[in-house]
Image 1 (cartoon, one colour):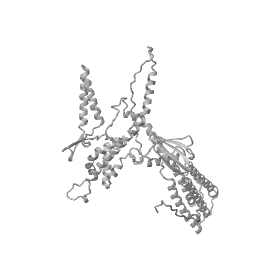
Image 2 (cartoon, rainbow, N blue to C red):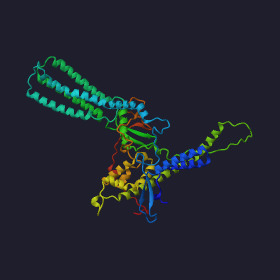
Image 3 (tube, one colour):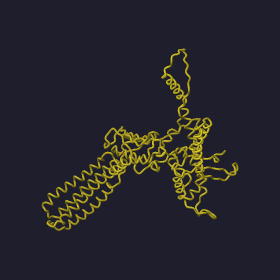
Image 4 (cartoon, rainbow, N blue to C red):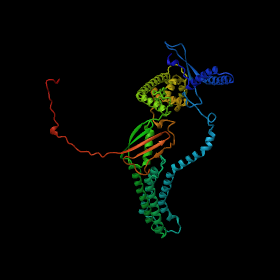
Length: 537
């Protein structure tokens, strides 16, 4: 029968039917009380299977020339499960063999995770908060030095002459420029929480603190204590502090932003266990900042890692039964360790002969099946999209629908092809029914093509575009045998770990390119045509 006439049933339902048949066969072999218990278990299992099979929808599709008048397609609906494909298993505290419920889990580990979240949040913003406090103190210090003589009643400062007023105008504009530049450089949300102190940033903040402290010290000793009456000198002293702060900001821009722009190294990022790799040019950064920069590129360039694809072409080891004979005729018992060694030796020799061939043909077969399912999905999506048109393009009476209603109307025609494709590419846990419908409604709303709809479910999407793999805060572990605040160097190796995924980063310095000049002599830049009898010219 054609593929369209097949019924889509879950692997779990098939296993329950096989289990029911096996229990039924054992029921005939057993007798007495055990037979009654087996019959009761079989009746409960059949009732559970009937309850599961009632949760299906029958879709009658139009018949073609070579098919039956009506063909029946069963599509299983799992409204309470995000993994709307087959082969899903849920274990809760009520069904767990250990009896460890989620309430006990929260009571045991909830406080620790809450404390970890607080620590991550504090470490994330403490650097920005400290830089903000020092920047505000440094910014308000020149203003306080200028205003303080006018606020104290026992301090008689002179009048501000025209040259003093011009100096005050320059003072105000310099402060405005310093404020804008400081906010743009320091008041930004940090991209990563570093395990070590950012050395150059700490140096800049230390210089701001020392400069502000030194100016206030001289202001208190030479101006405030002596009650200096020349207001022009006081304004000039405050302007010199603003100039020094502007120069410190210039140093900060060079150290924090410009210095790392020029590429000096090439870093190779190798992901384990799927061996995906990329190479990037990188400037002079510390190890921890290079790790944060590599994670940014990793989320943009690397495809999503699917652990279910690792064992898709591996076959289970087959144990062959071998019979051993004692050719010496001795009746002495054989050493029990010799027999397993002989079995393993024979099996390993056979596996060496056939394992690579089996792997090669299994991979070819899997790629063929993926291409076949992809082609079916593309055809089903194209047929579904042909039934949707906008109101101004539709001639005659039509029922208006919003994009979500239109997606619900055309989705059943491509549901089986999409489900089979997600099943063979092991992507069922990533996409729920509501997720697929929302994406289909988005494509319909913006008049996207069927290929644009199918592109999201290709197994080579970026990590940043995956809703389940990309979270607002991701935790990685940085492993290196050197201090993380040091700069990267040639042949440096460090590793980034997150659960089962690890990124091995190897740094290589770009070589020095020695270019020489070679001028072509105009006398030798002339050519002649050599002809012979066999030439076609």
